Length: 358
Image 1: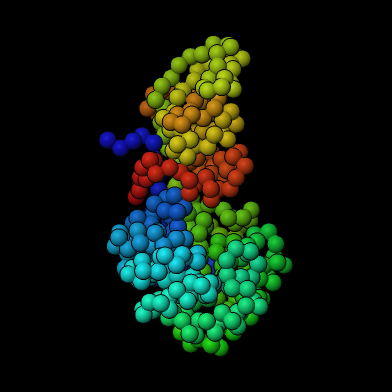
Image 2: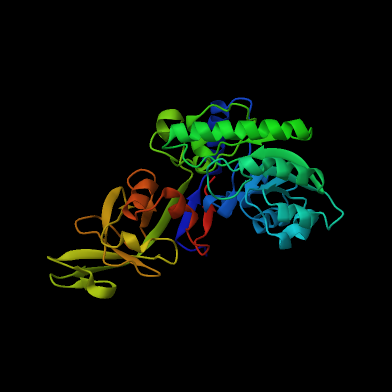
């Protein structure tokens, strides 16, 4: 029997989001970012769905290998600079990788096999990428290395909050692309826009985009829903396992952080922080039960948490939504937890089954 706690995921709504993104960037190739198990939705495990794209993006080599093992035969792009120890796996699994390290190129030269790469340009992210002043040297190394340059890309660090900085990033990127194009006639893909870049900037010279969070229907910036119609694809559901009455002065959960000021009815919900229900929600968060908002009482436990169901018609076994995208949204949860919706969604535990509802 499947556990009563699950993440309900809709492939239909995912496809609708893809359609809306395509309309936003007509003519651009969509390379969906399916890292971290498709932001915790596990849609990356549906190979029929993944086969609707010519190339998908992941963060690390092991994620690409997992896709190969599941049967995905099209191109997989690893966004982050790989480790030199992963070169054999990259070759044997025919993986396309981002590169910005001369040491990595030199290591490839020790193996008499070609690797397809996209060159990452540093334009202001402050993470990885080839700096503008080092690009000429990097191009020389590329020419003598055992790689096929199929793409050029960068990361826009602040496309949701700092338009002037982003415009400068794009300018630096376009200059770098021009230099690379003058040296390599194998470049097929040029991409800089993830979700916020798609929403807030024109494609310019780019012919590919890398949607992430917006694929799954959640806002990547404050103005997301003003610019595109999206459908949240996931609902985090559990159920009530126990109901009891408590009296004035009774405490709830570890540490006695909640003490009742009157008689109450309290329900126990069968999931906790080991499942992805953040402890920051203790005494602050709400859940959705039978169309009503119910407050979380006391500290969230590893495997359960308690809620106030006083004056609400509730029975053992009734569904409880940690977020249902309506009465309680993912963004409300993330705001209470003082984090971002990306983190809450992508860190729902592996012990929570994913239920593809359609």
